[in-house]
Image 1 (cartoon, helix red, strand yellow):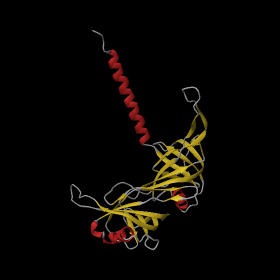
Image 2: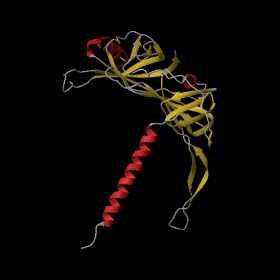
Image 3: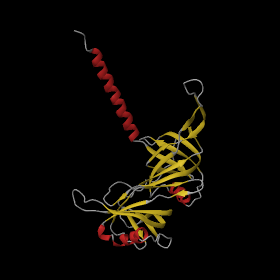
Image 4: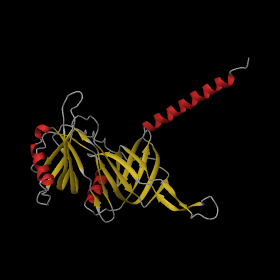
Length: 300
């Protein structure tokens, strides 16, 4: 009978590989991140991207059945940074300026820190501008933290040796929850708003692209929303005089302090419908779709 040593060896190697993968995942999960911006070292939730990538060019077809390819230049991937609204003030200042159409450039660095507080990598960036800013879904029943994702487009990045020491930083405040929000829109009853879908603002070179809003609320407070919908959509009074302004406030854990305000300008409704009854509770919701011409972000 042949021996089964190869199978045993395979099992051992597989176990070693699994243990190594587990150790690597554990090490990665204990890392923290710092953003250096405007002379500050700021703890953030996560950082990704910014790598240099070669641009692949496909040559025109020739007599050969195979297309030749080569590199032509280098591009730098966007940098994605996640941070709660009540932190990273210099980052949110950039976002606020970009939403106003100015799009300032910024130099800085991304630093990964191990569980012992030592810097393990440093990626510097030059002349980065805000490419996107995503507000998370806000839901009155959520227990998730309210984390904003900001994407920067750098002109160039470079990986350099990490610093031997890092400056001490105060413990960041606990992030506000995605349920801690307050919506106000002129002339609309917002007391029963239950959910605001995530939305992304995209500043570009010549224009800022502001997204539509999707808002869910209880039908109990839907009378003013139905009137608004009837005026603009059914009766066709879609003029600047019919549009509204509003604010979305992100609140602290005690719901007493405003930590960020998003202002909405020239809101118009273009959709309103009621959902099917929930399978468990039987409750329904009104779902309103609104366009928005302009938004502003202010961090308190």
